[in-house]
Amino acid sequence: MADQTPGIEPAAARSFDGPLERVDDCTWRIPRSYKPGMLVDGLIFADDRLIPQLRSDRAPEQVANVAFLPGIQQASLAMPDIHWGYGFCIGGVCATDPAAGGVVSPGGVGYDINCGVRLVRTNLTLADVQPTLVQLVNQLIRDVPVGVGQGGRYVFSPAELRTLMAEGVPFLASRGLATPDDVACAEAEGTIAEAEPGLVSDRALARGADQCGTVGAGNHFIEVQVVDRVEDERAAAAFGLHAGQICVLIHSGSRGLGYQVCDDALRALRDAPAKYGLELPDRQLVCAPVDSPEGRHYLGAMRAAANYAFCNRQLLMWQVREVFARMFDRSWESLGMTLLYDVAHNMAKIERHVVDGLAKDVCVHRKGATRAFPAGHADIPERYREWGQPVIIPGDMGRASWVLVGGPRSLERSFGTTCHGAGRCLSRTAATKAARGRNIQHELERGGVVARCRSREGLAEEQPAAYKDVDIVVDVVHRAGLSLKVARLRPLGVIKG
Amino acid sequence: MYEICEHTADLGIRVRAGTLAEVFADAVSGLTAVICDDPAMIRPVVTESFAVAGTDPTWLLFDWLSEVHAAFEVRRLLVHDVQVVVEPQGLRATARGEHYDPARHVLAHEVKAITQHELDVRQTSDGWEAFFIVDI
Image 1 (cartoon, chains in turn brown, yellow):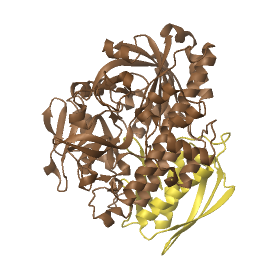
Image 2 (spheres, rainbow over the protein chains, first blue to last red):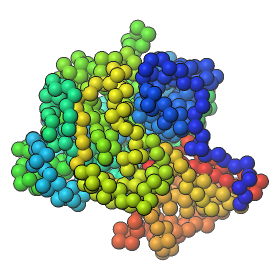
Image 3 (cartoon, rainbow over the protein chains, first blue to last red):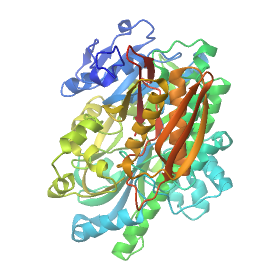
Image 4 (cartoon, rainbow over the protein chains, first blue to last red):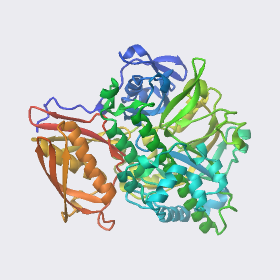
């Protein structure tokens, strides 16, 4: 081996030096003229504070690449938590028109299909929880499966798993593991229609067989939080939130089953670009027309995985309720542990949007981006409709998370979409290097956060400094009118893989 | 040899070796090192055979790594070492290792998948080189 070989240059070494034109104080454009083949502009929501970080990796290049996708509408969009992904950037939004040859791309959803978050309220206060916080977090990591290789306690037969993927959370309600209220307070009521469990491969079923009701690893977690600031009293009251209240945030997705569905789809689509004459700048953007056998096959399997993910978060919440009930020696109902909302942030959905004055059914890809419909939208649960859709934004385990509400400009600017988190700013290797000689767990503890993690790598790679400041990210989407601030939550305890 | 490279959210692995077969073998060592904290703790007590079809070296690497990854995900097989033979229509490999035992093995990362982003295998003046990113 010799270093001077004209070998492969990993893209991490490169930053983005292409054009970024200021549109307003929180929107930047990559003009269509940047690359021949772009069908629309790229549009990134960010402000001056985020631009240096934005340029430091290849994520803007990926925004430009997505603009090549046939049938793309309006613009290739990215949220302020944008960072380098594979194919699509994380924080990317792309809507395609099936009637105009629009495509669906599994890379525009990601491996973790319907990765998402749900927020559970309690009627406990900081004073109730503080004295036993360490015990509570220890109990959570003992009783809730978290980490690599951790199977769950819920074992479904293959036939039940198929029903679960077809029906979503209502199936769990039929097994006494969800209430009607849990169903009503999830995006799409915890069930995506037209799911095709029969199209999910045996390998995907094998990977998912014992994982429904497990957190997993990577950036997934369960956090005990306290509402530390209310920004919009009326919306907060409508969402059942008040300062000093304890909540639990759950972040996970479709586990091995969903990862395999994506992997299977990428394999099945390998020859689709040649078959459909698609010119793509990145192999990972592989896609097929929505209205094609390959496109329909992927969407059917993806929806099945999405329903599995809703069920996963439901079973996680169920286990969290049981732990709280044991710890506080009261039923979870009397602890007020109701679901505020559950949102997906890796998904492709057919939705009706107005594009250039025309109402169209478009395929909206949200890859690390959250649906954020404004007040009055029919797809919002009735109890929240006059305020707008609740949006839950996990930050990092040291600083904050947010509850927002769908903003008045989200439909017109971003197909009803906002950010999904803080967004990474350090690579995993850089974060690990930065953690050498430090004890992240003690640092968090000094900041008032009890952290328990199964792996040595987990806390180092996911340390707060690895993420952008969620307050800045949220400030941008608020000012852009995509979603508005309701309440800020501070972490108290976290379990991770 | 392999090295772990930076990627904002995930991990990249760069492999350099004299022959294509060695690149395929070393790529698995890199993958195992991402999954497992201390690969030296994996004993060669189980032997499994793999056959992967394909003529394009890049897709062959992808399909091969996906098979090894699936062996861990589905059967919990941790691979200690592999012998790879590259043939005109694909590769054959013998992998030795053991099944995951929480008492002996510390897992480091949950690898969701081998991605196709920046996936590359190429011949250099000194041998072969490969790059792939795993989704964490």
